[in-house]
Length: 279
Image: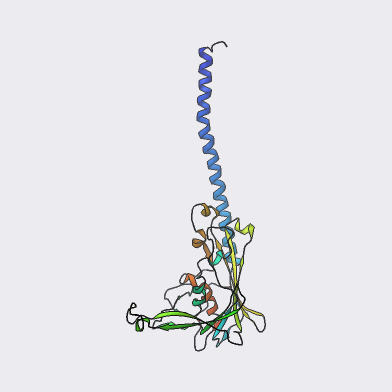
């Protein structure tokens, strides 16, 4: 094979150098395109979430009931995989789970000042400005289908267990045999897993208050949550930090309780003001 002359070697060297320089420039061009596409998708998904918040999500109150001593929970919130973009219950990922969910309806509520959405704290600790919750909660066990009757109890465990500090008051969730008839008013929820929405990082769920005697829906809350799809590769639990509407600025673990408080009123209890933002 004949040796390349100096001119040919020079030209080939220039071509090789140009190729080396062109690859980073091309990669940079592709990266810019990808960033622009991601930004456009983010903007479109955000705009869709804002539209859903304006036009679809919110509260609907049709009828109240007073002197309601106890309620029936047709479902109980359970923990989920909040890293899974398709997980059910993600619109209410911050909600209390299991016994905490049941307890939330038996606990006290305590108003908070300066809150724009009329939300408030919920706690088993009684204070001077506390308002009682329900006297009991019946639950349909999701494994056995049987009804369980739960009541709250507070005592001073230091009186029989000296490992507790004197004056400390402990909350107990007591399980009892069900009473008849069952509570008339029920609370339930539906988790929506819509693949086209989830692909955009959107999730939704509905909570309903139902009159079991008339099968009437007395109120409903439809919530949307949005976590940009890119967050699912960068965060362990993106649904826990998702944007939500309607949301509560105080007591985020008890959003369902705060909704129910506006519909079902225990004896001698004044209902809280209606949320400022509702449909």
